Figure 1 (cartoon, rainbow, N blue to C red):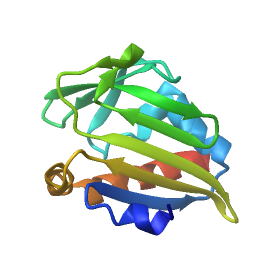
Figure 2 (figure 1 turned 180 degrees about the vertical axis):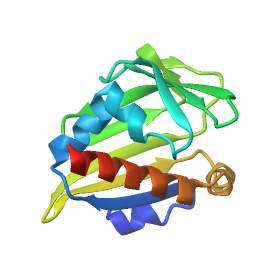
Figure 3 (figure 1 turned 90 degrees about the vertical axis):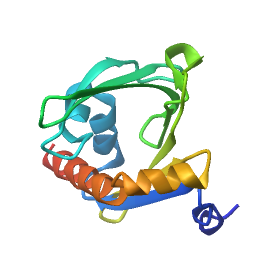
Figure 4 (figure 1 turned 135 degrees about the vertical axis):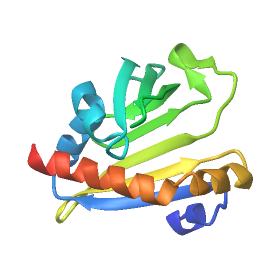
Length: 158
């Protein structure tokens, strides 16, 4: 199936950015907890990694701290971790592939060598068009654009 056909699925949201750093450097920004915390949410929101095992079946737990101090915990699972190339994670499962009570999304992150560094692409899958629409209403475009810019700034400075 071509990438254009994938992009036509109304249940999915997409973002991509060329980052002027190698795929290996962008990978580090995912794999190293202290680096991931620096870019995962749009500032001034803070991310704290509560648990993370960066491997298939590994837990991906975060505490998102809002500017007013409210904390929103999230737990998910890494489904695929292919070094310097691909990361797939979901909130439908927690560590050890244990099902969660509710799910909202699965993310597919791809890193590809590019003339200027790394082409970073994210495809965010939802179970329904309504969930994808709700994600857009929650600020997907602005939020993910901001976090991609933060990721780029971090990776380009390493």
